[in-house]
Length: 136
Image (cartoon, rainbow, N blue to C red; front, side, top):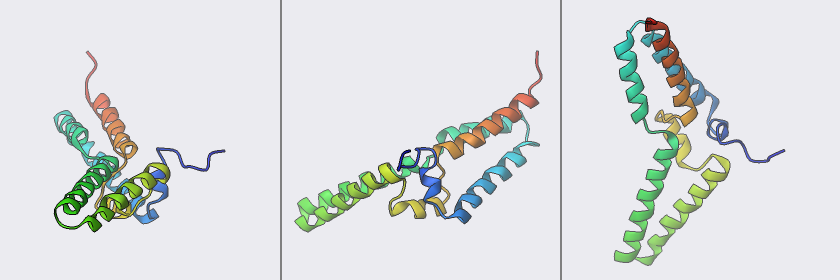
C-alpha cells in the first residue's frame, strides 16, 4: 500500500471539500448549459478547455517566476534573497510528492482545476457533441 496519494487524487485530497464541490458544481453547470447550446458552441468550449491552464501549469509558472525573481534579487540586491528560490523549490518538491504546497489553496480558490477535472468536462462535452451530431 502506497503512503503517497495517486497523481489524480493528490490535489483534491489537499483541497477544502467546499472548494472541490464548487469546482465540480461549476463544471456540471457548464455542461448542463452546453446541452442546449448546439454543436458549434460545444466545439468552441472544447477549444477553450484545450487552452485552460490546469493547476500544475499554474504552480510551475508561479515557482519559476518567484524563483527567477529571487535569483535576480540575490544577484543584484542581496544574497539573502536566495531564500526565495530555496523556498519555492522546496514547495515544488512538496507539491510533487504530496499534492500540496502553499499556493495550492489560493489557486484552487481562484478556480484552477486539475487535468482530470478538466478532462471530466471534456468527456461530458464530447458525449453531448456525439449525441447532437447526426450519424451519416
